[in-house]
Length: 101
Image (cartoon, rainbow, N blue to C red):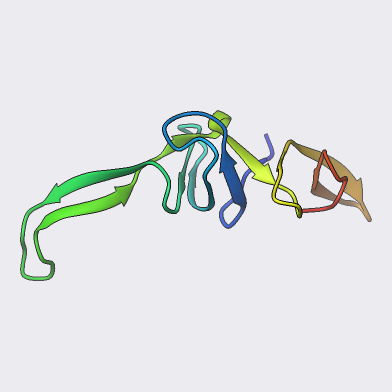
C-alpha cells in the first residue's frame, strides 16, 4: 500500500496529550503503523554516562500512531490524503484543496 504520510511531511496531531500541535515527521515505521514527529510525544529517558555522552535525563520524541496524525495543507489546516495519476505518475494530493503534495 502506498504511504500517505512520509518523512519530512508537516502534520498536526488529532488525538492524545499533544492534540492540536504541529510538527515534522522525522521517521516513519510502516510495519508498526507509527511515526516519530519532532517535538511531539516527548518522554524523558534516563541514560547511563559513557565515554562519548553525558548521562542524565534526556527528552526524546516517542512514536505516535499514524491514525492520530493528519497532513496539513498549504493553509495549515488538517487534510486527508488522496492519490491520482498525473503524467503517468502516482501523486499524493490534499483532499481539502486538491493541491499536489
